[in-house]
Image (cartoon, rainbow, N blue to C red; front, side):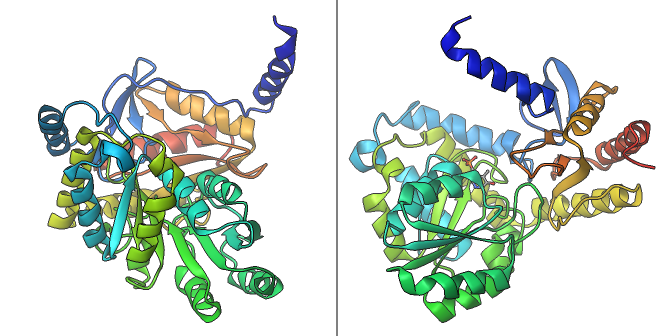
Length: 396
Ligand SMILES: *Cc1c(COP(=O)(O)O)cnc(C)c1O
């Protein structure tokens, strides 16, 4: 072995010992309620395919037709020659769906935070950010060079305190929070955060990656859930979760979108999303605008599964959304539980989540519910969780 990399061997061995080394599974089928994972057919509780759109025939035909019309790739960044009519159409449709003035479609939700935050805050500014914000927000804040002030998770009084301690020392201020938190499934108290920001002239930004297509009227997201339509400055979203495809969106007031289009580096220096993806996203917007049946089934499944899993004795933490953490605590036990679920017949695919994604000692299995699950799928999942939970001593 190359001596230069001995430190990596040691670090990897340590991760293995702590039960924190990530097992990366390989998928051998399209994404649905059931999938082929590492060659085995399993019930899927892992993906963010909230509405089952990832393998929807309508999205697939839209993508196929777009390849025929527009080709495989745009071969340019959007600011040079990569902005297709389709990209603009999708942006206008997303803006209309969310009830905001304008939107910008970028390569991913991760990119959307890298694009928006550094464009809006610099080293003379302060960003207030929730302790449990997503990694892409954390990195976006770092890239901005602004002073980052972390307030305790969803703690409005701590936010108020941090405003008073810091506001006078900086040129401008901005709030950034996840809407729905991806590991706990709880929601930011957006109304109360907004009120404080209004009082102090603080710019407001929410990352609604897990809220779009899930919460709000017909899946219009967390801003809609709190009735703050048209008031909130900026919403970040992803087209890779409920929308079932790929890409990120920055939506909000036109002046901000105009500015971000001029300044955002992932937009200016990285190629556009393909026509196939964009067309599939457009069809997803059509489906969401046509009716609420997928969003309704998602919530029906969520209520059914959560009530039953709690009745079986599991702790699902603070979740109020289809993200259902099943608390285990110890990372090694959690990984054993996940492996046992996978090995059962038929197997269940539900990932263990440990440090550093969640705090030490708070390892959990995260169950992601979907409109794609049938009642029978959920019952099989519930039965298997209870049986193995007892066997491993997680349930009494
Ligand atoms: C998933 C997620 C992202 C990343 O979205 P991608 O489109 O997969 O890059 C960003 N922010 C939050 C809060 C997320 O949950």
